[in-house]
Picture 1 (spheres, helix red, strand yellow):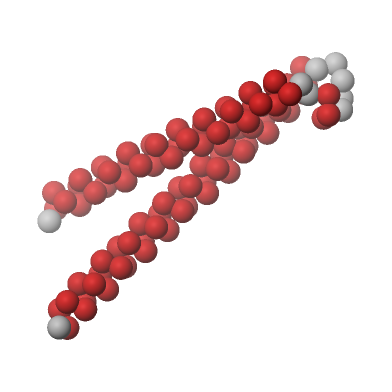
Picture 2: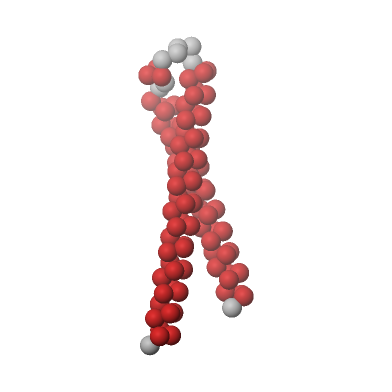
Amino acid sequence: MQKGSQNFSRILGEIKKEFFRFADSYAKAVSDGANVTGKNIIEDLSKSDSVQPSDISLGKFISAVKSGVQHAGEQMIKSGVDQVERMKQKAKKQ
């Protein structure tokens, strides 16, 4: 029974580690996506004759948000691919 308990604890430890790795990747992707969005909005505002943030067009704002979301999505996909590669390498070692 001791062996089964140790295996279960090891599995839970691995799940916890992978969850935190995923959460970290997600947080970084969202943060980077928000930064891309902010840069695009600031760039659009600097091209505008007006100085007021409220003067940015809805279309430009939506485009900036879309590019930020796309950037975050691409980072999450890359993170997933990296995770699969780590799992493959780990399986080869066993």
